[in-house]
Length: 255
Ligand code: NI
Figure (cartoon, rainbow, N blue to C red):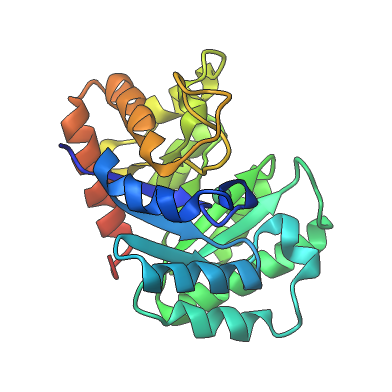
């Protein structure tokens, strides 16, 4: 079976409380070779790092999500740093800007994003970046932190912006939303990203891909995202699975 790798998941979400242990036992039999559990708060990041310690094929990213930025404790950078140096913690994330929901004020989001990019730069770690309706500010903050590499997770921007980001050296990662029938813009962005810069993720429990849309998402569904990307890029499914893993290894040097 072609090994699957989910580059961005939230299996610690409450939606998995009933059956998380059973699911984690079952996922390898569904073809999953690895996954990255991504933190959204300091506490969640601590839990993600602990999960990576306990489950062979699980890795972690640690960071404060833009929606949570306003509630970041004053010592959050120290606490994220203590987690980020652990061997199975691959990245600082998810971090970024979300002007769509704007749950944290924009100025707070920008400060917390910049501080965490600076941390990633200091530690030589890549960043997992959330960008929603905030293209210009995201690009300008990324340009202030030139040494930091990263991935634009759950990409929802334009093809033009995707090309700019790929030229800057960023990877572009797609979720189940690329499989949605009304998602032409996202499919166009995937078509514009070179194969050397593309990645696949579930962002579960959200964004279940077709044909399982509407149900709870889980990391094994990265198969459907990879199938769609293979179709868009005109490569065999097996090659797309391999490219996804190669690109993940290209970005996450601890992998
Ligand atoms: Ni996420």
